[in-house]
Image (cartoon, rainbow, N blue to C red; front, side, top):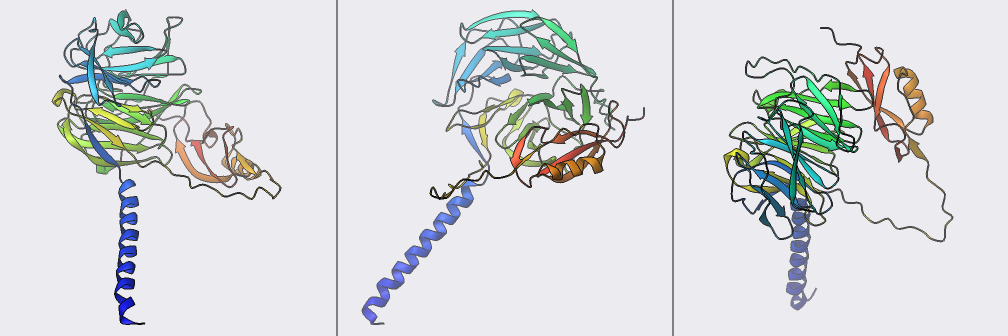
Length: 393
């Protein structure tokens, strides 16, 4: 090769290599979960929730009556009409049908109800008859829990329905009471409700709405003796339950619902009893977290979003529908029978998980994961939840 062309060619090769490396590093960076500092609030906050329609985040002043909304698009907080109830020692909130219901840990008599459209308040009797910050909404009703008491409340009919007693969460800690502490969290995930005990205790469980039954789930030893505090959120895209703690700690706890596993990462600030909410607003997706009693800092946490590459199709070829795995109804079946039924439905038997159940005979199927009726690609693995029988006292 003539000398005159060697240098330009070498430079071009180096430039191309640099571009490829830069692209690779950029792709790698996008896959890393990140915290993004957002505008601080004017006062410490509690009782965090979001309006899924507008994407606005709502929260009440901690130990006060001030009420605020945060707009992710403008990165700004603004004041609203004050709550008729002082939040005292924290609270929890849930959005349902244009209204926000706030339960307080030190108020067993009333809930505060904020009407978003009219920027006005009302109060209703506390259906749990106990102070708690553990409140969630789903399926047109509210769910509340404290200790061993768990109820469903329908605001449209004002009917309160007692539900199955939660696990006692027996532990070696003398500071943890039986069942859910008032400073924990609940999240409705389809036909299940996940919840953590809170108050720095390590209980965690899932409630099956159809069965009206709780199943205790383990915390891994590496999380440590001190666990999460008040506040939780659910990201439907990554199918992850979030909470944080311990008191004056900097740990974000993430529970992968599908994988049934915990991971942790470090928060950008210390937390106390606080709150968080998932925002689905396009371009501003993520879990928004307050600092709680510890301060006024505010952050957004974003997980990598699954990216599906475009698929090229041959429009000239006849289209043959691909076989699908349609999860069959398997409740009450034996493991052997369930596996046969799955194979006949173009599915693959997946992990077998055994849980205590007082309603399903030992060795029989409680449910599948995903649930029956779910349509999946052919060959998809389906988890089998099998009864271990009733838990001895």
